[in-house]
Length: 162
Length: 162
Length: 162
Picture 1: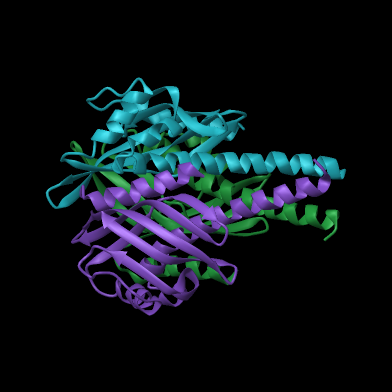
Picture 2: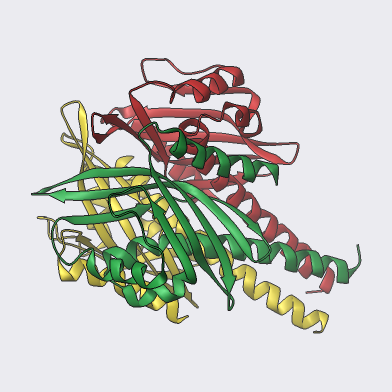
């Protein structure tokens, strides 16, 4: 292979690695944004037209402002929560990507934590202004529901087709 | 260093990064395969001669078909489980690798989740047909047993020798 | 861009990726070092002048020897614990770095595990003799305290400024 071809190939491979790591970081930022009350960071982590589709009582959030308001307010009063996102399966396709994995939300009751929700997640991300942001998060409780199971199976199969 | 040498070094380093990330993804795929009921994905994630050695009552699985059957069936009936694999220590050596870390299995009883098993894991992987696959998973409950502790200490020490 | 410039850029980008992955591995090594009783590994994972600042009853550790002693002893007698570190936000700046994220410490009481502590963490790392090591770990219980919340918000904001 020519020097030119080797450089082209390396640049493509490094870009793919950078994208995957950047997406790990977007997901690793979710817990700190919410448990840290950092609603001001939300505009860098989510797209302007984002949506957070969850099966909790709240019914989710349909705009970036609603996500920011949630991040600012969820920790302000008891009960206390802690949001842990597990390292996901990531599939990058140009300027869009999908991440699939588990999340655990702990609830503090009295002096103890309980794993309140263990959930299946699908994150659809877009590269906007050079930064990966979440456009859609789907979150479903892992209580045996076919919908929660399908979220995980879909993301896994998409990753294995690549 | 010559251009040739720099390209050689970069290709080697990028390959190592790709291998580590690929192994993160194999482990991140375990939960989705089992909690998503995706037994059909197991042949891409495990080697043909794989073994899953665990100290649960089941005694583990000694073939890829048994792993696939488990993945297809474990979520079909209550009780519900959720399998979370933590980002491991990874040591790559050519076409084999070892990953060492914790896993948490949640069990849903009634309306609540409980961390049923928090375990030490050793994953031995092989690159087969260009894809990293698990050849052996050893899983031991972190109940203070010397064997569980040794799984973690061994993987850690191997990573620090490199 | 010239071949020289492209090689320079690639080497810089690959170094950044290697640093981030190496820091993931340092954090992934914490649980195995403590739950594996591998105090001998601590000198490779922490700097000589390290400090572990935590709000548990112990008040933390102010030297590497104290961290090693803790790693050797914590698992020796009941109650049993398991230490799980979540994949963090990482910001690298030359030979120093900061990692921010959650940790969960499980306590085994009788036949069950409980999430004893879900905490906010700030890890300040240094590259010493070519290896990333922890110089300071700050750990605060996520019980709604402003200090715990500030740990997460600070690390998140630092990562978004970069």
